[in-house]
Length: 82
Image (tube, rainbow, N blue to C red; front, side, top):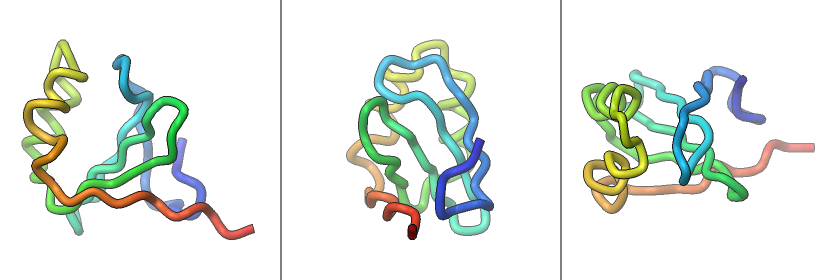
């Protein structure tokens, strides 16, 4: 699965209450998160170890709130052109 308008970003489904999938581009250290019933957003400057921590965390929502949310600049992914 990929993000419309961003074909180079591969999204991985995760078992979490807040979000349904995540993707990561190591070249610019952007973490993409597709929240449930919301647009996809990305977090700037996220180190790879934080992404790996999120992927392996038994409680992904808690890990996200503790180590990612409010720690990195957040932007909404613009909608794909029609």
